[in-house]
Image (cartoon, rainbow, N blue to C red):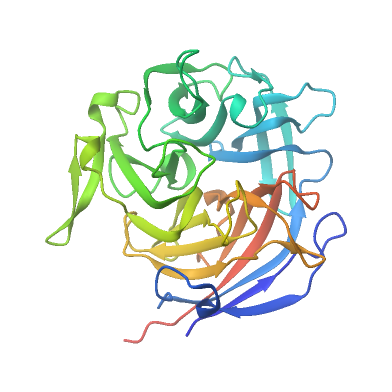
Amino acid sequence: MNRFSLSLPGLAACLLLSLVHHSMADFDAPYPPSSLISELKWSPVVKMKGYANGDNWPIAWMHDDSQLTAFCDGKGFSKKDPDLSLGFACVYGDPPEFRAKNIRSDADTPTGWGAEGIKASDMIAVDDVLYMFVRNYKPSDSDDFTNSRLACSTDYGVSWTWADWHFSDTFGCPAFVQFGKDYQGARDEYVYIASQANDSAYGYSPDIVMARVNKGAVMRRSKYTFFGGIENGQAIWSVDIAKRKPIFTDPKGTQRIAITYNAGLGRYILTSSHLTGKKATHTAALGVFEAPEPWGPWSTIYYDDHWSVQDGKDCRTYHHRFPGKWISADGKTMWLLYSGLDCDLYSFCVKKAVLEVVQKQY
């Protein structure tokens, strides 16, 4: 049985709790324990030095080793700047010694709090081109904020070109499968996109679905294919979105998911929020899973209904992700980037995760 250990935040600025040990069985994880990773240890939360205000924080690793992030419903890294529904910043260095600076963009969007304005769900750099999916896109006044739309930039996010199509079915909060700096070390010539299997970023779906597209045709909807299951050990891809099948299922729901390839371990790491027994937009729960392929089969590294707690009360967190730049060469140390609504977590927060890896027997 795996041992999952949790060190809840201990810095004065954020959470202060002691190390707690939980077994996976306590939390009814949807997949069996990982046979590769026997333990995950969390260190105390670290927040960006100086001012940081906003949430979500999708982040792309650029070819020059910097990172571009997007902030939502906040001022980003400058008190002097206006609140934006969608804004951008450059992030430099590695935690705990990192810094950030806002940049101006033609995609800067005046504040539309919550679902009332577009938010970046994820970004990725591929061969010097930056791609971004936004959620809460509203094609017309008669539509709901339940669509996602794609844009690209060739000048570090200063200007954006928007796709002439949008997802209106299932892909409500798309996330790119992340591979290294500027997509170096990718498994093949495709860009992979995963999402909770519903139209809105604010609900929970038990399933996660996946699409892929050649990296030279990311802006062309006609080139997208959708994961349709496994036959004879091989993934099936269909041009018909109606034939999609889940790559991952959690009866407790999935929301604001992310997948990053850990090259040191040769594993895809998936993070997701889940429900904890009652309806909620966000919870204190977190699941971390690993698989040899982007579509599985999945095993559980960590699963806790109360990952984020302060003074005995849950702190709602969301949009957890492991940026590829902050994964060690051996894959055993990763930094989780996230934000939250409570406990002074409406900020750019990171937490170190150290993995205990089972030695392979030969």
